[in-house]
Amino acid sequence: MAQIETSMRGYLGEHAGLKFIFFGGKGGVGKTVFAAATAMWHAKQGRRTMLASTNPVHSLSSLLGQNVLGTHTAVDGVPNLWAYEIETKDTIERSKVEIREKIQWFLKFADISTKAEDFVESATMNPAFEESAMFENMIDLMLKNEYDVYVFDTAPTANARRLLGMSKVYSLWVNKMLKSREEAKTLREMLSFTKKKEKDPLMDYLLSFRDRMEQARVLLTDPELTSFFFVTLPEALPIAVITRFVQWFHDFGIPVGGVIVNMLIDRAAVGADAADFVKNRVAMQQEHMETVWQKFDGSVRAIVPLFDDEIRGLPMLGRLRDSLFV
Ligand SMILES: Nc1ncnc2c1ncn2[C@@H]1O[C@H](COP(=O)(O)OP(=O)(O)OP(=O)(O)O)[C@@H](O)[C@H]1O
Ligand SMILES: [Mg+2]
Image (cartoon, protein in one colour):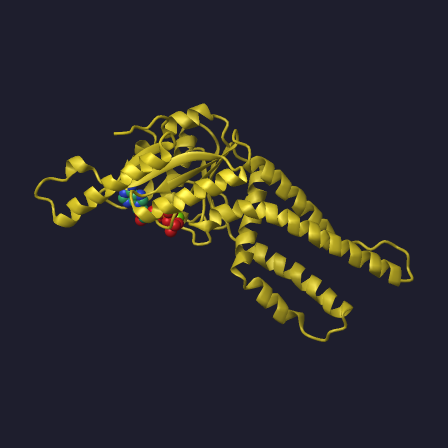
């Protein structure tokens, strides 16, 4: 039977300067509870820790039993720990204003008499719009640098990887925007009789955005600062999901901290008189554990048992933390 080489505790000891910690994996595997437990562990080490949710479907407030939506909130009873569910409403409103301005300008330029509003609505109803607003807010949080450690509770599946993949796409996009903006500006200046240079708030925004993206990219690809941990269950689908993730992240040059297996049923606790479905499940899990060792040997950081209750509230989180950081 294979064994854990470097545990979660060991890994974080070897990478004591880690500042940005992420948890990825299929829906419902335990990303949120592990993010919270990891943040609690860091806070206990005396480090100012921010537990931030970038999952549009937030669940930190209900996990902690405390409203943390939209503001940095000190977690009751846990010194050094703050939690924060990032709100995209304001960012989306601000982006709408910017898009509206751009579309209005274009419609006027092209002499089209349509209301900009219809275009604005269809552009901002796109789900990718919320995702990019979330990403912007996350970067703002990282660059403000008000905490020692940031643990992020990310959205399931492709989102986490897209979040970072986006930084490449974004800089391409922003460069293109800048170019067309520059051309339009020159054209306008050539056509106008007044020679005074126009102020261009959108251009300023794009430039600062590109700079912030670049800074974020540097931070997120630095293995001394950033680590992504992938959570799986001993089941086929979640394993398949993180197998793809690990590959993608390697390809993108984003540091992978390792794999955490969650909800393994304690075999010793299952007696001979247990119901068949329980025995079958234990057997199934054992089989999938073989795959886990085959695929991720050397990268498995923790194997966390299935608890007898759901993980809610600080006492339960404390138990989970102790099991993650044995
Ligand atoms: N080891 C465990 N034992 C028992 N229950 C657990 C364990 N780990 C997680 N849970 C429970 O499983 C559910 C899913 O956990 P969690 O919300 O952390 O998953 P998630 O990956 O963040 O989900 P989502 O993709 O929806 O954000 C929760 O109800 C949580 O309490
Ligand atoms: Mg979650």
